[in-house]
Image (cartoon, rainbow, N blue to C red; front, side):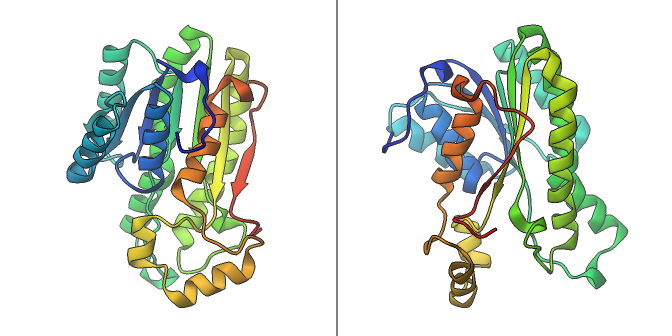
Length: 255
C-alpha cells in the first residue's frame, strides 16, 4: 500500500467513483482496490480505463468494474447507477470525482458551454447521489464524498463557470449532509489545490505556473493524486464515522 493506512472496514465495501480512469479518480480507484473494496467506476476514456484495470490486475488487486458513461447525460448516468446496484446490491461509498477545468474567459462563455460545464462539474454529482441514496438508506449507512476545489477560495481566474460549480458543491454538500444525516449517510467534500496529474502536467503546469504555485503554498512541492486519494479513503472509512458536513482542503497550505 506504499505506506497508506489500511482500513479493514473497507474490505468488500462497494465503492462507486465517477471519472475514475485517470488523474485523481484513478488514484482513488487504485486506493480502494488496495483496501480490498469492490469498485465500479465511470468514465469515457476507454483506453485509460482498460490500462488501469490491467495495471491493478498485475498487482493482484480485485478488478474494478468499468462503465462507459458520459456524465452529462443524466439518463445514461441513472442507467449505469441502476446497473451497479443490480450487480452489487448496494453502494457503501460514492465518490463524485469527475470534473473538467478547461480554461475559458467570461467572453467565451455561451449558454451551451455554461450548461455543459455545470453538467460535468456539478449536475452529475447531484443526480448520481440521488440515484444511489435509496440503497444507502436501505442499508442504514453510507459515505458520499464530493470533489470540490480551492479554485473558488483563491479565487482562480479564466475558469468562471468551473469556479461557480466548485463553489456550489460546498453548498450542496452541506445541505445533503443535513438531509441525509438522519439516515446515517455522511456527506463531505474534498477541496484539492494544484494536483500534479498527467493532464495538469500536459496542459497547465508550465514552469512559470509551478513557480507561482510553490510561492503561494506553505509546502514547496506539488500535491500528488495519491495524497488526495488517502483523504478520500479516510472519509469513506469508519475511522471518520462522526465526520459529515465538512469540506477538507488539501493544497499544501495554499489557502
